[in-house]
Length: 137
Length: 137
Length: 137
Length: 137
Image (cartoon, rainbow over all chains, first blue to last red; front, side, top):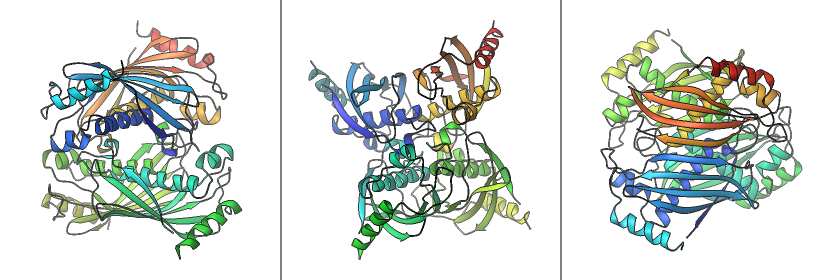
């Protein structure tokens, strides 16, 4: 299963070369995964962080920037669940526009307790992550 | 006429108190006006800045923050054209959610040439700004 | 008394026109006031927000952008305490470089309790704010 | 040779958990490399992007976030030149505070022409990059 989310390249994303500045791409990857948690896992970040005082910090990122993205383009972010671990999950994201890949990234997130310790995913999240990934096959 | 645009409060907007950090509100106001230029004035920022090398810098801002906005809320931004000057326009924005006003702002933008000098609005923009404002009455 | 803080204009502050994007100016104004709290009032934001769960949200901003600031310039921010209220304080900031004013802003901050209610400044902060302002005369 | 630059963790870097949000770490890595270009290579980004219309986009990032960084901490960024290629250079950065590593990252930057094509580093940059790296041994 691949989940998609579109993010338009707006003025605030662009650097003096008129292209997306890489820290803004990471605001986008965070937003994509945040919306995946809300829409697909039905477990929004507000619930995780504000209500339950847990967290889903990103502990590892690998990203390749294949081609620049320009002001006014609309980026399609495709999300796949690459790996589900005990306390972590790796997401594979591909951003593309006009038929060319602009950025690919693998981000590993960990479920942490209010004390900041890694812990097993809540059953509710794990079940939905697995159901989503199985639809891929 | 009042034009509306919804912006969800996402993780990247929020500070350690879990509420929108004011510089992020200004990323939102910029995005709202940018989208108004694209959708209502049919003159996107990419055309202004990249193709024609002009600009629409903001020269004055007044903003009041009446109540905090929290992660997961959806802000409705209402935009009105408050004043159309020779080379400038003042927009009045109101952001609200759950029936309460969170932020109001007046932003004055100026049309500038590639050399950075204020200049009269292109006829195309002026006509549409006036048409939009007239629909208000 | 006027307190100064220098902020270099870096790549991440600049928009496609190569000048400081206004939301980044507000990251700067927040940083200037944050450092004023730490250095002059000896009451850092980490103590306010993390240790004591209070806050100092900004409730009103007026800002004028007189001239653009470019990548590589060093902005001098001059801070004055314009008004000390019961629960609020207004700061007047002027950013300049190469002898020209780039931005002036008045920002009003309020002391709020963990419940989000405005409350009288702690004596420690009020005393130092007043001592700083008196040095002006 | 290892070059160091300190960046204080300020309010604008922190998320609702009170720790540095990962896109802000990348604003920091960009700032660190930008300052390395200005101070060590004597070739500031303003010259590269504004005067000469070239660019140094980041094409690959690997980052690990070992421990959270909190508001008020001062991060030491240590920079090493890991690899100098024909048109690219890989920098290895380590951010630490209070004796613990918070983040390590490898970032590969490419020299590009105004048309966006990768090109050999200017002799001036290459010579200084090599001189800096040799001091390591």
